[in-house]
Image (cartoon, rainbow, N blue to C red; front, side, top):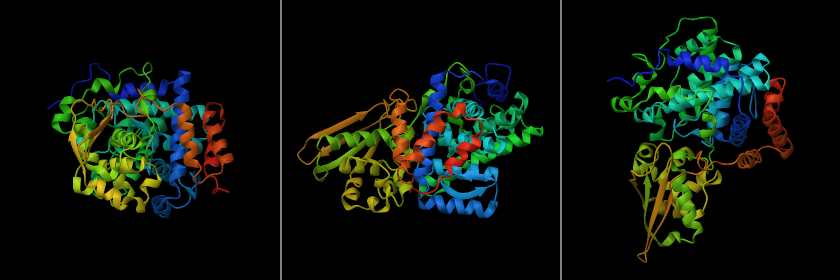
Length: 469
């Protein structure tokens, strides 16, 4: 069964390599949005740094890697280049609060930015060099993921780790000054390094947190090998054993549109289609969480709820709805981040789904457990997934009334975007957990002035700030 052929003679990796090497002029709005996406990821990292997973995963990497010159966001470690990128990616993605490219169903900032930050500091690159490399990586990665039309998930692959390796290879290669041909080679090498399994969904394992950092490290490795002209496959994407044929099941391969992998390069900016999360949980449950919160604010009494039905797109079921029994009893914060029953129950009962609602004691609150037992799901074919991550919550009360709230377009989607000011507010809220306001403002100013920063090391130094005073 064959994927749709690319309607041009040049390979996808060649076209993406040309784009990454030649990118120079960026519309101001795109540049500004890119800097806000980086700022959002940094805030997520600071919010995560005191979580148990952060210390344990960072210590494990540090023990294996040994000391090095590169710093880690908010932690005392100094690590080798690739290991610092790995830990920073883990911190940025660890709370599942980071941005998502909607059509690609992929988190890209958390692989591309850590790769660019670590390598940029290592090379003494300017902020503008980092910014251009980051944008090139996100633009390419978004298209590579979007071409699969959500199909990677169907085979159990996590696009963030999988596609992130290709995107990070372009970021690293651009910073290294690789030629277009070498950038194409870097993508061919990344094909052998890219990975990411969705098996964590079955038991709330921590492995998803590792995926973007591993992709960043793999991308740096691929670019370094390509710099030495190591022979690499040219058909990294469309080849007989390229990304799409090897990682998509037959039905998804039929739907795959390889023309999307290069469409609109340099004229359509996918940075503007990256969604920033209002909740620290899987994007696929945000609409139902917002719907439940709206019902809470309308005055619904959780004790009078007889049954709840969450209507979701088919593409969300495997991640946030099944298996039902497990989703109704999340064993960890990570379980809860991928549970429609928990998101809906928390929204109905508390009117919130924030970091506090993911603490261990919040997961076992009796009234929440009672509500989770009442939550069923059904597939709504009218929801336009993956263009939108919509949903609806329908509640039957004990007096016979039925109340419902539908969110067809999730908040944060490009058609309902969080404004840059809202992203800054989210950044300050996340940083306030572990940083003083002056340090947070210094970081904000450095990131938003990145195109004027002479050396990325200045940013890396500030990000390794001490604890809140």
